[in-house]
Length: 134
Image (tube, rainbow, N blue to C red; front, side, top):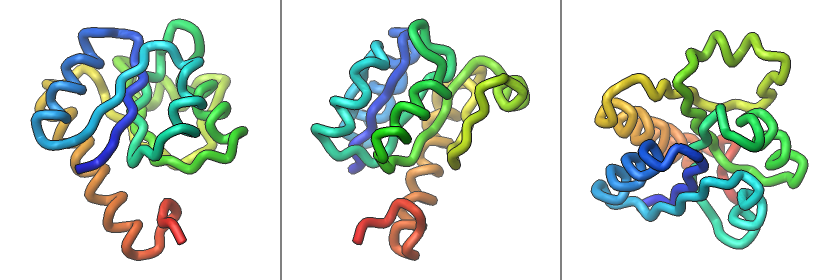
């Protein structure tokens, strides 16, 4: 079981992700307002952050910069209805390693991709990867 923080202001998407991830055994916290991200990450340890790139108040890049400015290490999966190339070509570049998942897929595919990310993260942890704790 992993503890996952979801930041998405589309309740339909966050509810579907939350339901699916809980069903396969993960503990989920959902926030719609990205202003809450730092207090959440400082007050609790999460194994993964699922971040919508197109939030109402901030872009996903802004949220990642905020997290990085607070020196918080957490793997991030970016979800968006835009494709990865559109996001990469934006003015605000994402300077950290992250995975991208398109929202324009069946929820089962999205959940499978998240599970694969968690498996890779777990593998990297045991190999002493970038998110391993000392």
